[in-house]
Image 1: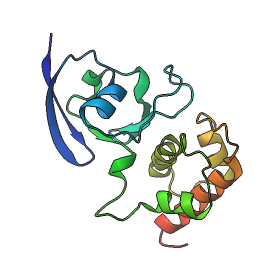
Image 2: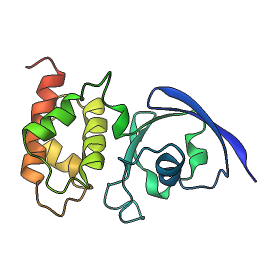
Image 3: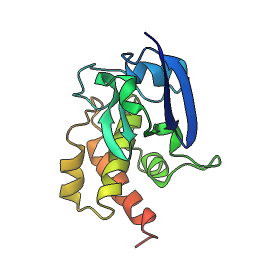
Length: 158
């Protein structure tokens, strides 16, 4: 049975008549056309589908859209503001922290959630915080460098 699901998506209030059991990742991609969030493993292990739900990092591939009811959902598309990339997005480009780019949105969203909780993480804290996101291209060192750089930028260049 379909029901109206209401939530905030990237700063905009949205509502849609949906089956509440639909997969959140599929709704984000197929109903709202936000294809930055990727489907990969389907079992919440790789991190490609990472988004923020009320500022907490979650894997959207195993959640139903009903969990978003009344909450704030942020995808990779919601990080840039007024056409300007977020410092994390800029840092990933500057540090060449991507190769094929498939995992990059999930990496950035996981890093963003981590920096919300800990704005000045140590290198080891970044490594530990990013372990659950997989990159088959092997850009991990550059990813850590990018997150360190973005952390400093977000703190005013300290």
